[in-house]
Image (tube, rainbow, N blue to C red; front, side):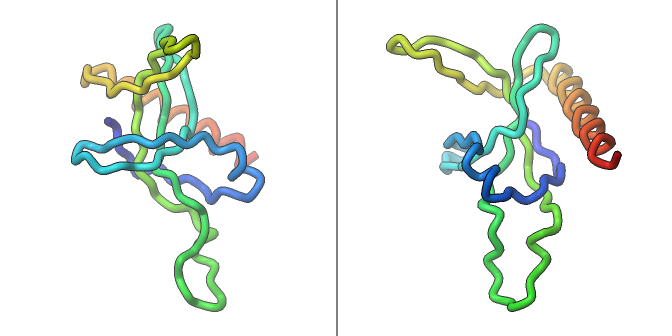
Amino acid sequence: MYCDDQPLGGVGAAEEETRDLIEGVDEDGNNVLLEVVRYFFYNGEEYVVLGEAHDGECDCECEHCDHHEEEEAVNLYIMKVVESEEDGEEIEEFLPVEDEDLLEKLIEVVQADFEADEELDDE
């Protein structure tokens, strides 16, 4: 899996309802809640960027807290999307990218996408 300290902004109430969350298992066998950040295609194959799901709420007890409004660094993972059918329903399975060279290229693609998004936000 790909990990990076890509900053993601907080999630507002309207976005909370449309979040695409999945439960997975990490390398150590622990359950983790992940959020779909974005889907993208590379060389005709579909991939997904997943990030750790956060509720966007501050857990501190200070009265004048504004640090939860700052962008927070989270781990991101790039997985290959494999569609299949089970009991007549289409399902998506997310598989780790095993090829290190391919993974490096996917990281470059995702970083370029994030940088392009930031440039659009700045305009």
